[in-house]
Structure formats: structure tokens, C-alpha cells
Image 1 (cartoon, one colour):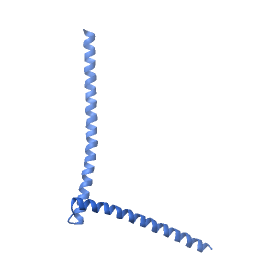
Image 2: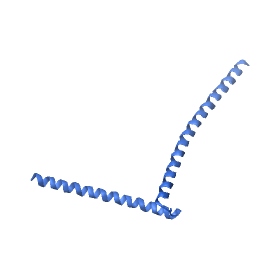
Image 3: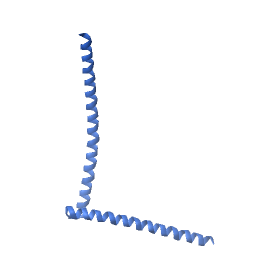
Image 4: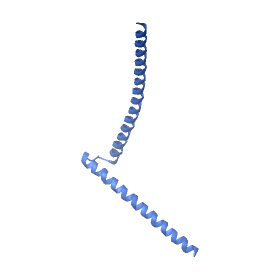
Length: 101
């Protein structure tokens, strides 16, 4: 009876594993169709190496843009802080002049 239970659960496990693999393959196929459609729209690449190269270039560009955006944000925030300090100094100078007059 224990052997039968083990067999039953092994079969159930294998069945679920197979369903999972099929689901993954289905998603992979959908992704492949989307990529192929995109390639048809922009033109075919001469080789798989060209596809990988283009993909890597796109990823690098994205990462660089992301880095630039963060870098520019930091510069912008520093610039804003300097402007605020200058505005505060200017305001204080005006207040002092008003009180002196």
C-alpha cells in the first residue's frame, strides 16, 4: 500500500512537472513570436551572433541611460541646493539692507 501511495504521488508530481514545462514552453513560444514579429518589422539579422550583439548593445545603452539619469539627477539636486543657498543669502542681504535703511 505504501508503494502504491509513492507511485501515485510520483505520477502526480511528474504530471505537474510536465504541465509546468509545457506552460514554460508555451510562454517561450509566445516570446519568440513577438521577437520574430519585431525582427520582421526592422529587418532580419544576418546571424545569431548579430542578434546577440544587438541585444547586448541595447542592454548596454539602457544601462548607460539609467546611469546617466541617476548621475544627472544628482547634479540637478546639487545645482538646486546651490541655487537655494544663493537665494537664501540674497534674501538675507536684502533684509539686512532694509533694516540698515
